[in-house]
Length: 273
Image (cartoon, rainbow, N blue to C red; front, side, top):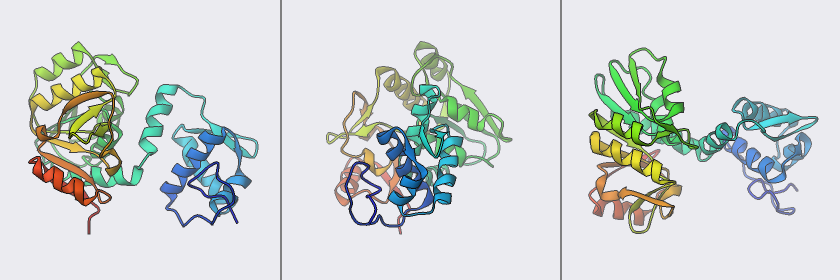
């Protein structure tokens, strides 16, 4: 019997259920973070797959800048912590974020203006805007700007400002840029949605930028996977009632669905059958 892929420090338990490649890579990365250095052979045993499959997983993780190869195994990347932090967040709940991004991007029509914050979920919205025509994107996200900056049919406006550890541009310069603009849509995410229906962020700088974006948008869309519900954090950004639409994934439970409706927010569930 192998160790449970979902519990890096667990003892011998039942074999893990079959995972999708993206899910397995996330778990592999979590194990590497917990163990610091681990062999391909041990990962193959733990996840009940072949060593060749693990090598492909490690190659994909290395291409994302998350791990580095060592003799017979892998360890966490020693590259710039700024890049590593963003890559770690992007990997978490990746399938849900992709589904949310695809659904949310469908709101946008050719010729419209869109604001995007610097979150990893919003990056998935950006990726699904490719192919639109005459779309203007305003963003304070370094990764989002890089994703869309070379795409035909999309004009990108970057706010400028102080570079924050979340790969975002914040502060007075960012706010001043935003205050001069108007957009049809804002897509943004948060660290959590508290039991009091407050939208929470990681810092005052982040909250200020999101608030400025909300003020210039005709329609405000929160994109947040189901793990964000019931989670508190450091700084309040706004109340859920300040949002027009909320896009999440099918894991959201009935209680939260009801509360979102009572707040006057239109709910959209990605992957719902």
